[in-house]
Length: 309
Image (cartoon, rainbow, N blue to C red):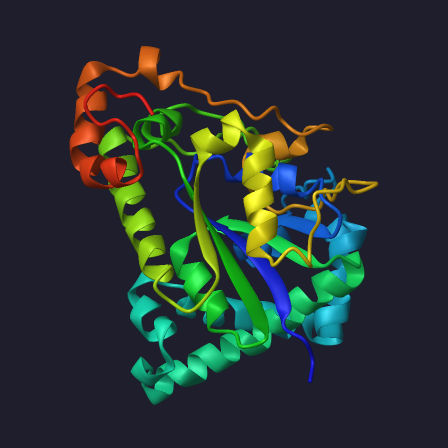
């Protein structure tokens, strides 16, 4: 029987520090941090955006080897299949993805087709990289549930939480997207009320994921920034202490898809709390975001009234 592929999934809302965490994990022996693998078909193979190594995706030798090993001459057909299989990765399908007995026959067929598409990809990544764990920082909850439905994957969740006000402020800052190498383009910005609603929705869905019989931990980005070593130790523990060690890799893995622009830096970005929101966020926006997210802020041990974590 073929062993299941270990996948360490970093889940949470955008602008929560997932790329910073993934960079730190990429320093560990055996950790293969591939960025947001959910976007391999659209942003990688389709749009030919830059890989984290700096090469356009279709010119990257690593991803060329992975796709060849996974699909061979059927790659073009698989790309078409990926567009169809993407319908499985939707929030509305999470109940059916959570338990097999809730899936009608049509849903079961869709999930099986999704597994046939994705499992060879993850197996090929592990084989070509000679790593022991794939670190996938796709963040989206529906993708986490979809991957969990693939029986050949061993998905373990790191639910990454960051203060909703810090997240909302970050979403208002425009950042250049260097992976769009053929033109100048910026990451999208969101008004605070929209980012607060997404923060609430995504974190609640990941709380639901933790009720499933899959290994999972929750970490706060602020705790990670204050003591990265302690958080990394917890993550190593989530993997049973056998798949990863805290020892450094000789050459950190750099072939990431999508994510924060810091992934293109030659050295990992410093792990900082980044509390600019305290001085730059308007009082009205702070009050709005706090009011919308107060129940979970308190549950996650953030100070709701004073606004300090």
